[in-house]
Image (cartoon, rainbow, N blue to C red):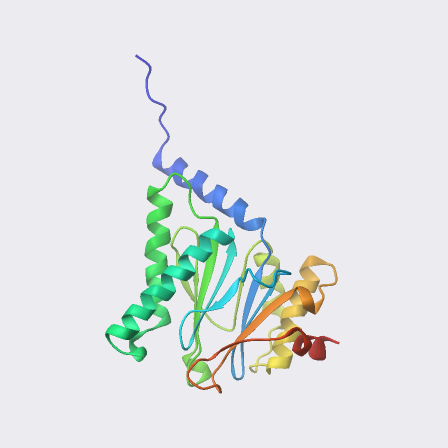
Amino acid sequence: MAMPFYVSPEQLMKDKGDYARKGIARGKSVIALEYADGIFFMAENPSVTLHKISEIYDRIGFAGVGKFNEFEQLRIGGIRLVDVKGYSYSREDVTAKSLANAYSQSLGTIFTEAPKPYEIEVLVAAVGEKPEDNEMFHILFDGSVSDREKWVAMGGQAEALGTHLEENYPKKLPTLEQAIKLGHGALHAVEAREIPARNLETAVLDRKRARRKFRRLAADELTAVLG
């Protein structure tokens, strides 16, 4: 009788983690920056229909990197979750923290129990009434979650983008125009090539807007800033 092949739990988790990281590294990066009036998102994405950045609820935005179908499942599930909670209780009871916890639990369960982990990272961000009330939660493929400030970089070039943003993010919160230039400059520096405005997906959570804070930026808005 043949003995079953044994793999230690430590090796199994390491192999799953390496597999997920390799898949994420093949994708384009996403940047989120706090600016004076909210939170700004930028990603290289030439598609006009497949979005990496989306609205989840009134004050909450979502961004994903990696396999589109996998983070799209989380996005849709998150919308359903917060819609039910907002309808059952009140819209104020819907928070980025509770959504990030739900994503963390789902990704953690998939990572430990499923044969193949999700090859994604996601960001849940919420704009507050004041800059200090902003929230940004970065959730990894294994369910690990971290509370971030100022900026977040995810995807294939996350480490290099993080270094660039750490060195160039201003001490005072930038304006939206400065945030656009900072994000574009970071992508340009890391990719070492020109990225036209038409290939950028951008959006903001703008606290000055009425109930729904999410707004996509048009290509002509970017062109006006980037020249």
